[in-house]
Length: 316
Image 1 (cartoon, rainbow, N blue to C red):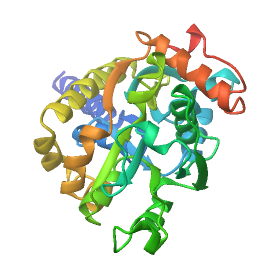
Image 2: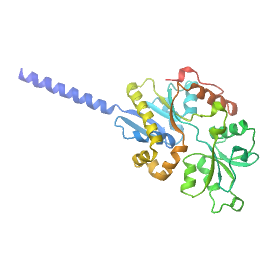
Image 3: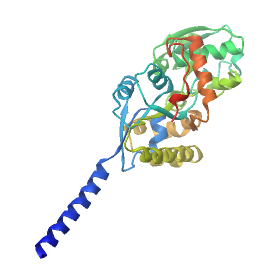
Image 4: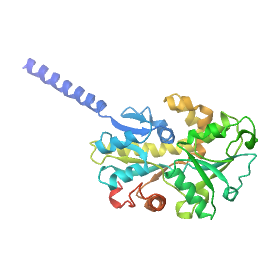
């Protein structure tokens, strides 16, 4: 009898410890890009039940959506919408965490009081026929202005053309006006000491496009950890609120949690966050801005979404 009791106790302990081990192993898997989305989740990087994969570019995010390899995918809204609409993904749209991060920039010595100042001027931009370029073109059209636009591949590719040892743009053959985004803008100010004029293009768009959704959170509806995912999303909303309300404290807390933060630097993070438009917005409660965004993309480049607009099925 004593032997049976010992066996039963051993079995109970084994099951209990096994259950605990399983719980620890059952981590929510999150994949996301570096940049503003990573800043948005920075305060949650030490969560014990979450495993993060940080990537560059959209290719691995696309692969993750198709293969259903992660519980949560933070990606450009365009990526998730396109894959869902063409039947390649079943990930549901939960929330938007960044809005428009597209700016017109000039040096202090070059007037940029309003978008009218670039009418008929040359602008060095990036992302031709993609979202940044579309936002620039839509902002110009909304105000009945035109500009001569040339392009570089990415936002950081513009920096070498814009940075100059003198404010005399003719002497160094630098562009007077550029399209840019955070944290590149703050890098120009802090690292290169350039004084800038800055216009947020969201502020000069038509009313329905005054909030342009960018990075979004998609969740796997078939994940066995839905309750944990919902808890994570509640924490993410609070984390972003804390980031915006106490930016300096937030940066001090996350600065050593990822190489992206340490390489970007504390000063640049603290100054760039307020202009990065990182906000938590429920997707299903803001369908109007998502539909307006689809229509904007389809107007200027219908290849991005295939001319389609998302329906109710995408929302979680």
